[in-house]
Image (cartoon, rainbow, N blue to C red; front, side, top):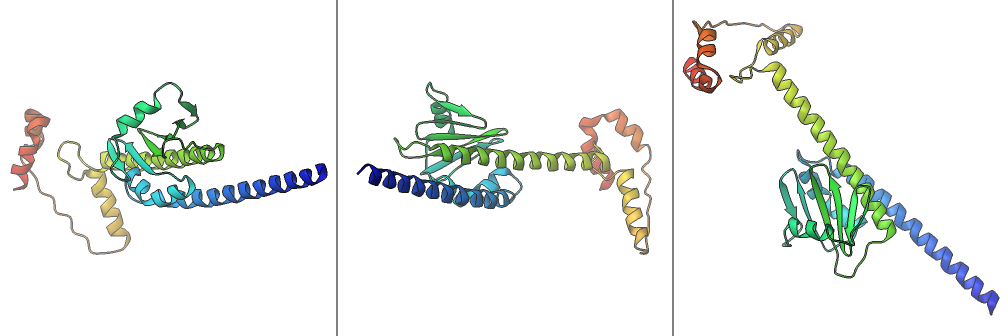
Length: 219
């Protein structure tokens, strides 16, 4: 009987190991899909909505709420995000890098925001699921960093190529456009329009009145 018990225990352990391996493999595939889906849209919330069905696959839950850079989203009619943040701030909440959980509530940190996943009361999160949540945190943080980088590049482009006061293309923008036109050997015409004392008027009126001045000068 003792030998039979050892055989059964070994078989159970082997089955549990195969089940765990299958779960890890499925989670890895799901996270790869998430990385692609999160790149949809301009804002991180757009990618989150696109990726949500896969998030439910790798981290089964009943509902989700999120708040990122002032934009709020919920999978369905749920208590506001502030309610769940209060729950995660109470005594008894546990934390690891990028995540915090308390009972059935799991929060995933995002730069300038948080994503909260909810289960039925009494349903806890397993160790493996918490590891998947940390990987999701890293994916969200990477995507948000990419969004910040692109946003900064766009702002620098505008600052370098457009006048800060009038919003019109500046000399740098004009020279770049001419180089492109001349590079393909197309017929190019440049028209120069002079506005008498425009610079002096702009300096006298100041930035507050330059919008009206621009409207008058381009009418």
